[in-house]
Length: 482
RNA sequence: UCCUCGGUAGCUCAGUUGGUUAGAGCACAUGACUGUUAAUCAUGGGGUCGUAGGUUCAAGCCCUACCCGGGGAGCCA
Image (cartoon, rainbow, N blue to C red; front, top):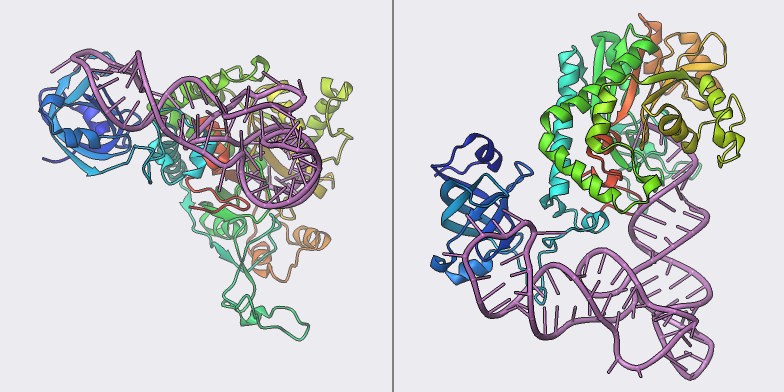
């Protein structure tokens, strides 16, 4: 008999036929009820075994975590927890899982709640929990929806390089990659490591952004996006940073900052709506999980909306759009500023906004996602288009409640002279980026794009609170076990 | 990297001003149970108190260093 996904069995098959499923035992109750999950859905199937007519040696091996294949008749359940169940005619233990804690190599997942911190230490097995299987099914759905969103709008996916020789992107510390002997590298006359001897004939790193390359493609294909891993060697130890994370970077020619904001807002809303439409079971589980977590918090720290309410709220409300200068004004007139409750004072135009300021705007003042635009040029990257005021650039950051910056983008400086001037002012080696500057010499056009942090989006969609729990094998400082 | 809280049974935690034999719930093992829902009931086993030093008659508790984890900050997506 052909085995069947439990998801298909639960949604498409009527009782009265024989079925075969394969999965892992979640619980075994009363010597009689086996809950089997195959990961195709959050739901498990209950297999009922006639223990009086089953070999006791087999019964003993039905333990939490064991892999089994069962065949039997699908029938309506007499119990209340499920519609249908399988009355087992044949069971095979494919892989045992030791449950006796006095023996070595015991299956570490118990039929009870575990802390996320503990599960992180057994990341190779945490896929087998409801929480993580739900998270990674949603991560897949969001990956698929991301490609669908852009494909449906005529965008082309560009695979920008992961290995890059330019270290001029200014997006953070880079990981050096080399094949030189670390003990005895070749040296030049100055005693420095001689990278002309290295694999690429020059120093090379892992990419921190595909943006500059995406711009090259956009200035021919008009609408492109990247979706791939990026790497930052920053010693950041927070719930929102990874050394290896995935980023989506659309880039659109003949577009300005308003087009860019429209696209980003549509992008985020589309993905959240896609999750609501296609991941309802997993979201219902995570919604309940988040509610249970909230019970352990103090009243004032609990969120006003549940996870699903939050998702619906974001798709059905416009994001607030305001300039950096307007935001500074609001912050200076705010209650915490007057009462000196901010740890960092808002001194006026030019001060970089701290997390506490962003959180105030999003969570207290507007209570919805906020797009901040037109930041002072001094605190933004060299490639952002300068405004006529000579002070600000056409930058935008999208801030989400509970997460902070989820998108960062800008209209790009398309004017050769202005771009070169900014590069010189900010000590960006123009020589190395000759290819980037070339696009401003030949048929340059206004264009814009942004970077969307995939794991941060997943935090919002799943209600998880640490990016280490939405990345299957997170890389963080001092941690790359799996 | 900085601030802060923590590390005690397989997991989650309690452990009083330093003082006798370090506790609980769950998990696990054994037994009972033919409709359970993270089953229930009974019984039982299980500890290098993060590591290394130190103070003391006496340290899970005090001191020092280091390691690991959480939360916050910086940097950013």
